[in-house]
Image 1 (cartoon, rainbow, N blue to C red):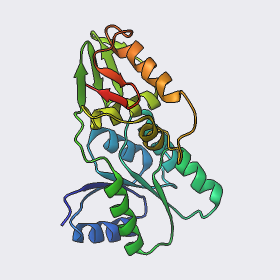
Image 2 (image 1 turned 30 degrees about the horizontal axis):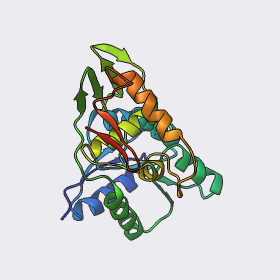
Image 3 (image 1 turned 90 degrees about the vertical axis):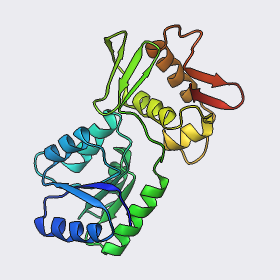
Image 4 (image 1 turned 45 degrees about the vertical axis):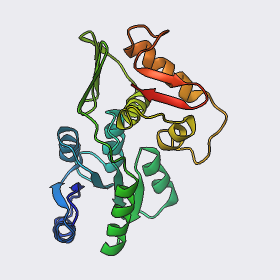
Length: 226
């Protein structure tokens, strides 16, 4: 039986009841929200292993909820649900940061299979809510960073990169892995985007960016958060 915690953001009461019953039968712990604003608030205030997110929601649509979560540095897997079948909507959902997309109506067995696949791909290592190293403190849940107590502005991509390194802290992570898992490239193009973002993180968070002690480069191998 699973012990994973799922947030279901859906405004159709009948579907919420059906999916909650089926998911709980599979051992998942399920919480729900009936509109986008409430779903975003819950997702930012609590830890979930996966979010099922409808697109057509009151208050705030699913695309906007997904975008705001990624801007706050959240890496939780997101499965979007929608009655729309147009390719453009699917592409838009994936570009805002969704991990998978399921069009209504759907079979519950397919939903369960997709959830299992997303959870298998999700990082298993635990990440502290507040990461501290040197003069820096990063709160992934709130999307905030400070150095010596002063606020520092990090982009959504910088939060995602730092969180990925934190999930594998102490391990060497290759440039190809970062391009695939953080940027979403299916192949590793010739680009210095990872190097540039690593440099930006050092400039913002390291005490001495030219001689970093925490965000390290291992030549020919990759990067490591020490």
